[in-house]
Structures are given as structure tokens and as C-alpha cells.
Figure 1 (cartoon, rainbow, N blue to C red):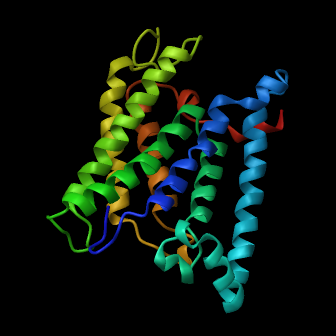
Figure 2 (cartoon, rainbow, N blue to C red):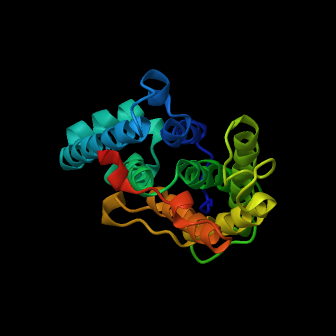
Length: 251
């Protein structure tokens, strides 16, 4: 949500938005388009790619952090996509991929997308509004304006996704804002707003630990998905509508 003296890194934010490909993969389910009989095919493939990708990046970053020459080469190669502090710790793609791995394993495809939207849309909005309008600063350098930008941008992005979901989905879905026969319906707007607040609070208090393996790229999506799941269940949804049983990947 914008630190004092920070600048808006366009290249990094564009890379940030490109990360939406990860949650959209399980939502669009391209594997089912090729092999319709392969149940949970995209989720199964996604889990494999995320697990191997996370492991690969951990190995590469571990080598980079232990080898100054390789670190300089790596930074020259992808420096514009990294935060300044990531030069001496694991880059933020690692915790983001691990967060998505957990989402793929345990949550419905709609919650996977919604949880990542909080981060992928809310974070750039927080950086922009915090840098451009941030005047009320807190103890950690983050601003009230950036926090509000995060919350409302995340909420609007998630509401827009559910509108599109309701428009394009041909079958009944509990995640419909309108036109569905089941689920909270328009109450989803309240659930989304509260969940965006929850994700915003998690981002505000997020810390970086274990040399970058834990940061807001991990904390925010997990906070968002847990809030969505708990509020959805409190609104009357059975756990089977908001959670995914990883055991289903075996059959």
C-alpha cells in the first residue's frame, strides 16, 4: 500500500497482472476442452506445474543468493520486474505460486480467482493511490489512501468477475450475483466487500519473513480465500461449494 518514497513500477505491476493467468487456468479449464473425460484435468495439471515451478524458482533463487556473480546476471536480466529488496531475498513469484498451489488444492475455482484478484488488482491500486494521494501515513509507512485503494479496487474487480461469471456460465452456480436459483445472490456484494477488507487488513499487517518466502503474495490470497469461504459458509453455503477435496484429484 505504498511505502514512503516508493515509486510506481509499471513493468512490475504489468508482470503482477500477468499472474492472473494462474488462477484463470483452473477457472477456464482448458484441459477439459481437449480431454472432456479427464475429470479435474486443469486442476491436476495446475497442481503439478505450480509444485514444480515453485521448487524450480526456490532452487534458482537459492543459487542466486549464494552466488554474487549469478545474482548480478539475474538482476540485469529481470531487474525491472523485481522490488529493490528482492535483490537479496527470494523474489515474490515464489510465495505467489505457493499460495496458488494451496488454493488449487483446497478451494473452489471461483474462490481461487477471487482470492488472487484481491492481490493482483488491489496491490497495484494501493501502490498507485498511495504514491499519488497518500498523505495519512501509518507506523509502517503505508497510507490510508493506499489502503482504501486496495479495498475498493479489489472489491470492484471481484464484483466484475462475478457479473461476468453469471453472464457466461450456462449452469446454475452459487457464485451468481443474479439469474441463479441457489446461493447468496446479491448478498455476494457484501461478502466481497468484507473479504476485500479482510485481504486489505492482511496486506497492511503483512511482513516479509524467511528471506522472502513469506510475504504479501502469500498472505493476501490466503486471507482472501479464508474470508470468502467462511463468509460464504455463514451465508448458508455447504463447505462442498466453497472448498475442494484434494482427494478428488486421485479419481
